[in-house]
Length: 116
Image (cartoon, rainbow, N blue to C red; front, side, top):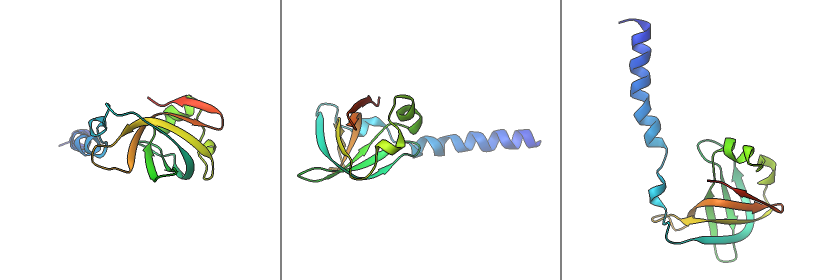
C-alpha cells in the first residue's frame, strides 16, 4: 500500500468521527421561539460553534451561536461578546437540555446579527 492510499483510508475513516462530533439541529424545538435578554457571563468564539452563557432574571442559559467565520463575516466580532455586556438572543430551546438554546439572532452593543 502506498502512502497516498494509506492517507486516503485514514481520511475516509476520520469523516464519520467528525460528523458525529457535530450535533444536529433536530434536538431543538422549532415550534417554541425564545427571546431572552440578559448579561453575558462567559463567551466562546470557537469551532464548530460559538456560545455565550446568558444570565437572565430567571436562569442562566447556554446559547449556541454560529461558527466564528459566519459571526465575523456578519459583523459580530469576538470582542462584542464580552462578559458584562447586555445581549438579547432569539432562538429555539433544546428539547432535552433545559438550559440550552440555539440562537438564530443576537443583539449586542446596539447591533442585531442574523446567525443562521
